[in-house]
Length: 262
Image (cartoon, rainbow, N blue to C red; front, side):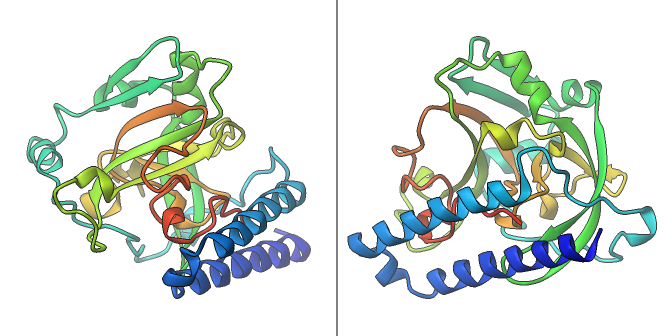
């Protein structure tokens, strides 16, 4: 990677990290309507600028086997306690199925075995966490575009939403797990990117629970919190305004940027 590209990637990572941490430390302020409107405007500007800088098709840097980190830190949730998830994990996910629904012509229900039978992509890439650390890992999975092509997306669809099994206790309504269940979303540009994959292997072995088994998103040109783990279903939507906090993701609902490009 050239010095200019490395500098630009580091600069964008730093800006996104500082922005996310600053907002996460000001929850009360970030809930004020006026401040929210300022944040939304800033996020929209960041999205446009980053799209201009990195383009829609540019690949994230890929590395060699020798560059793989000896220890890869697990980000976010590492041990989901969702009852359904625990039951599936107890049977090695033999009964797990990925549901693809929403604004599609053909709903899908795919087993892990069926996903593994599809053409796969392997990539060695760097994971950049909003907390400031990075690790390099090898990921194998199905390109998201191949799954969406099978589902035949309807013209009005604009976003892909990943609904996950993990719930995070942040003082929400414990009687309504959906109110705190992790979710993420990306646009169709990133969904079509060749490095956007649904990974079922890490470093040549099946994903373990801390890293998102049975299936996780790898979105190599964005920060780690965008890479949803423990995926249960994928929904195609026109807008995510009515999903949970309406910002397009668990951390976005709490002040982080929706577009976390690096």
